[in-house]
Image (tube, rainbow, N blue to C red):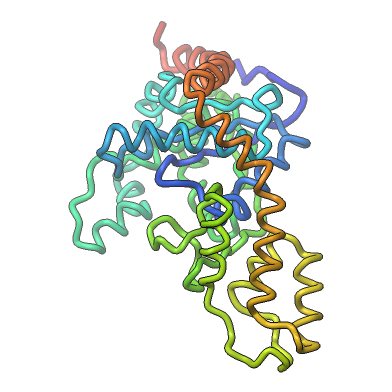
Length: 329
């Protein structure tokens, strides 16, 4: 009993971990590219709240982050009528499948997991959630008959365990049929978005530009970006954090900025102002939508619950096949 096609289009799935406030790096590196997939794929986006539980220990922080992420993606253009958008924790079938898949993987494979190895290298005592993280991730993916998972070139190996588990299940229980879809990586050009300190923008480094900061705070932060100290009249090489952020956001503005920097008579202060204006022009309408969405948590709950019901239709079909294959009612 192979997977039943829910749609003529292949399925793409993206998980979003709700930790801290979404920043510009999330928008340029993940949100904007991911939203473009809905034109080609049947897209599933889920807020990975149970994955966040490996680190988050504050109930209110977890609750707030889930709403922040939901409102952010909606404000940035996610259409809940055109994609399936839901909370991971609203689909309990994922835990049943995670147990089945945990019986398809050797502990040695999990011991080589990146998060687990990193925790050990730091001298930490990682919890079992971090150890089993790849299994829950695999269940997230195969539960929805996912064909492709967007990853950067350096993240392809993250998908290999999922492929191994699905392939082993099909070998043991499929009798020649693909009961679980074996996903492929959808390789994209990973956008390395620099933070205020020049390193990759990340929540852990605290070097991000929070996406929907008020206009004044946004401008004040941009003016702190470290640039060159050449005199105003001197020609300048278009490089560094400010120029790279401009290039990632709006290439045509970056082209104009490069030309003016090389010509001289145009300072880094002017460049910061031009970047701020370009960024604020893109974010201002989204900021307004975000504030309205974030102020109505019951509406966000209803929207996520509706998405979860659609997700559970696919999840129940998968688990019916799995339970039948392993000999359970």
